[in-house]
Amino acid sequence: MTQTKPSGKIFTSYEVFIIAILSALQFTLVLDFMVLSPLGAILMPALKITTAQFGWVVSAYAFSAGVSGLLAAGFADKFDRKKLLLFFYTGFIVGTFLCGIAPDYNFLLMARIVTGIFGGVIGSISFAIITDLFRLEVRGRVMGFVQMSFAASQVLGLPLGLYLANKLGWHSPFLLIVGLSIVLGIVIIMKMKPVDAHLKLKSERNAFQHLIKTVSNKTYLKAFGATILLATGGFMLMPFGSAFGINNLHITLDQLPVLYLVTGLCSMIAGPFSGKLSDSIGKYKIFVIGSILGMIMVFIYCNLGVTPLWIVIIINVILFIAITARMIAASSLMTAIPEPADRGAFMGINSSIQQISGGIATMIAGLIVVQKSEHAPLENYPLLGNVVVGAMFITIGMMYIIHRMVVKKTGVANS
Image (tube, rainbow, N blue to C red):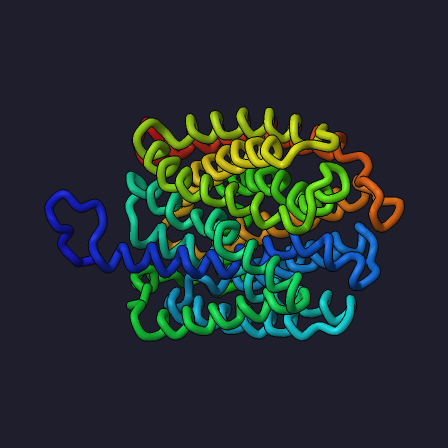
């Protein structure tokens, strides 16, 4: 960035545009993934599939995203990041369109694989762009706005998606995402500048050598290890959230949009606030606070029986605020680990590990959770909650190692 910042302004107008465009892009990606969770209660009876098969629909995206991310990682630092972003976003749009016309389970499974091959790489490219364009001291704020996409997808996308699914069928939310994505792609083509400063850092290594060098870096391996457990919570709980709410908590399909709307609104407010706090009082401190609060809420939520809607909303709000703070802090810390010449490869590999770990977590969750008949309560959900809590606890220690590495590298004690 060569623009001069106006007095008293943290970001230039172009940096604000980049934050907005990456946030909108993440919104479409997150909505594409998250919409499957509330649609689970509709999809399973509509396609006559089991919880395990539904777990495969979710994890198919994760596994294909993980594989493609690894294959693309070696090339991630060889091209202008804008061009790379547009290539994979186009593939994501095609995959989502295939989901929107899927006639049966097998076609949907294939469509999710195509979507994952392209969509799973986009997040890592976005994080590489953020790392290229924004200094560490403000990345918490940037991540706070970009991670608002999770909350925005709940506030705007999930209620609308559920409404369309109830009125027009489960295909319609995917077609909505396609329309939004096409508009966003056009804006990126017209307004976004090339992101190619990393190309000036000449490297003699070919793509394969670059990949191997990044994977074998001992410092990076510690970060990859932390990522494995970071993915566990969301991927284990989210896919069966709507089915658990309807069959165990006795929330109706009409009440689900209200639950996601209120939770999302609160998370949208919490996102930028959490990002600002992580920059001011420390990213690791916010991660620990979010993790502890999240562990408590996961334990309570997974042990609920029939529960009034207002209580479920309160628990969900606190849980998602905790998860939002946790992920913003963790993402900000991770961006400080790679060297400039390795950012694209590191982010690609890290995203792949996250997706593959999430896919495995979803599969395990599908095996732990059992539904004996179409409208029967989900069984073993408390056990699932205990597994998630245990993973979150271990991750606190692993992220402390990452925190110390960042402090040593950057000299920023409040990282």
